[in-house]
Amino acid sequence: MKFAFALPFACILTATCLLSARAAEENKDYMKASPEAIAKWQQMRFGMFIHWGPVSLKGTEIGWSRGAQIPIEEYDNLYKQFNPIKFNADQWVKIAKDAGMKYIVLTTKHHDGFCLFDTKQTDYNIMNSPFGRDVVKELAAACKKQGLAFGTYYSVCDWHHPDFPRGSPGGKSRKPNPNLDRYEQYLRKQVEELIRNYGPLVTLWFDVPQEFNAERGMGVVKWVRSLQPDIVINNRTGCAGDYDTPEQKIGIMQTGRPWETCMTICRQWAWKPNDNMKSLKECLQTLIKTAGGDGNLLFNVGPMPDGQIEARQVQRLKEMGEWLQKYGESVYGTRGGPFPRADWGGATYKGDTIYLHILDPNLETLKLPPIAKKIVGSSVLTGGTATVKQTAQSIEISVPKADRQQIDTIVVLKLDGPAAEAMK
Image (cartoon, rainbow, N blue to C red; front, side, top):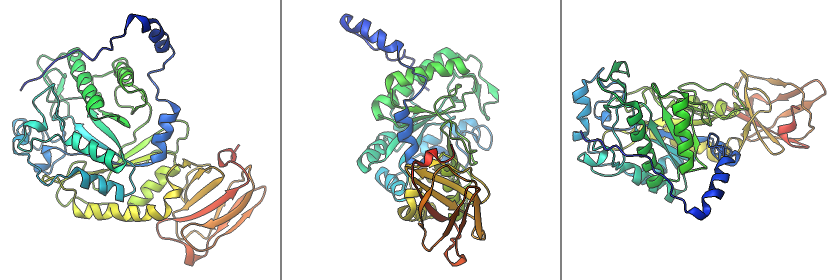
């Protein structure tokens, strides 16, 4: 298997602008995305995660089943049979768009080292499969055409690459002659390809750093941001990055630092035949609770070996999109709060408006703590009426039983000032 080892891209500056460029660099904090970039990403709230590769032929978990359920040699040769002739990037993006998703993140390289893009660093990639098409290029173009942001997942660890110290199964074995410095150059060159050939990217979603410590991770983050300053980067390079990534669970309410829950629509990240799929209620309440905690939701699908997303998953996503078409104003562009998330549900807000997401249909009266703003109007976004009583001690909201929804009853409160200042 061929690997190319090249130094990262170096910017060549002319002598006349060298001093000013150095001064600008000294004032840049490459470790942090700009507040504007973070805010733009947060406002999207809902994205599609896609885990896909030759392993879909087996229906086992991507990366993790290498050397476990599937012998390493067999796993590494699956790409020679991988020919997803029904893959249609425009169709994938339309599915995401119909679901109300605002961005897509694709696994361009998982822990197994196989690349879904036309990389010049290794021949272990999609161009050498029977399919022979650049999946990342087609998906990035389809996102641009249909108005969705595009981001790339890239695994820091690589259990296939000879220079990464750990191998399969599950990163528990050791390679005979690893060279982590050389592997980092390989990683940097591939990430440069992703940014330059398929960007601009909304995010770089790294994963499982293993041997990458904080110092090495910080170096990668700074270098990535030098290539694309407005990119947002997650917390899995070995350092903190821009946002946290609670996995397969809804993150805690956290308004001081951005976060994004990553979760599967079924149970497995990669496609699995007859995998258990979440109900519409589970899917929507996951999104609602995430937004109420001030987080994003990156919701995963695993396409089938032929390149299609399962019809039942498409239908579930469409149902989510239909709900969001009606009530998306209470999710997109909002922040979590000002009330803390609780058993009853949670709240989102923007401007002078608070959206109360009451998830318990049996709750007769919702009691909330007092706020520093006056409620000047109220309505029920999901239909019906609500009685709202505000005193110096509390706020009480009652919705008649006939108007309570099984998934989410949304009561809208209009304030006499910014909702962000309501709890101050």
